[in-house]
Length: 417
Image 1 (cartoon, helix red, strand yellow):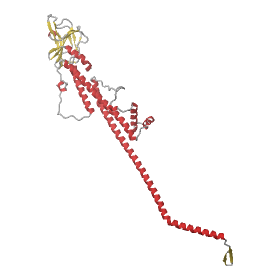
Image 2 (cartoon, rainbow, N blue to C red; image 1 turned 90 degrees about the vertical axis):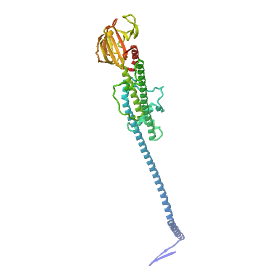
Image 3 (tube, rainbow, N blue to C red; image 1 turned 60 degrees about the horizontal axis):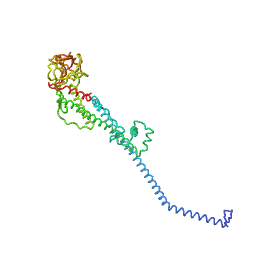
Image 4 (tube, helix red, strand yellow; image 1 turned 30 degrees about the horizontal axis):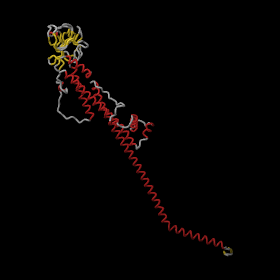
């Protein structure tokens, strides 16, 4: 029993065994708690250090991850910038090629016009299904694929909006934008190269055709007995021309420029040969008229014995039209012995023509005439047995067979017209 006294007040408290046990238990628990708290405080620094170290590691890991992500973003951004620069560089190159093709087309246009005026076929032949394509066109691409590539290229450079169907057609291409751009640019570049090759091939073909025509005309002229230069050089053909200057080595030119220059030279030669041929008497003075007497020895109609006939005779009624067989200058227009009324034309290169037995002369000395011009009317003046046209061709004053020139004229028609 426990007695508590306070002045006159006295209290009695009985302590039972269970209460003592409870007090001891509380004291034990307190002691254990105290000891645990003390141990915690002792070990707290180690725990806090470990926790801080763990947090520091996690922070470093996050920072490393963020740095890696930033580096990846920088690489992607750099690659995009590089791809954009590559695309822009290739677009610039393609634009330069396009400008070069446009300039070529401008130069080619005038040359093709000259070639067409010279009678050459200027149409560019397109390959058929049976014809192999050029080596530059040896890609496994169809026309639809090329068209799709062109449209996609236009989309890349912002000239057109992307179409859904085209986007699907190019969605299956492996690689990034640069890889797809490389494929597109390769197709477009090969197409441009194909156009350039077609231009070069066409120029070479025109050059070869011009050379062949010039050679054919030259051979025909040579077979008539004319003394012409083998290559028909301008200085030899045109002695009145005045050209000159110091010799300077030619500038280095591209293949296209060299081809254009070669075609110019071939066309110049063809035009010069044609100019010579047009001046010479290759036409018929009396078209669709029968020949009654040829060049050479024959029985003279007045003396009845063998005599030289210096020309050919065409059956022609009085007043029939007589036309110049080539361009030239009239050197005689009037009476001339047995020719009666006669016209003589100088065609250059020592070639002259005579038209005899005329009923009327329509030109005078000094007149310039062209092939086919009406110069006289046929008749029977001079030493003649009836109305006809006597026609002569003379080289350096000596009569030659006009049939050689008439036959040459028939051959030249297909090359000059």
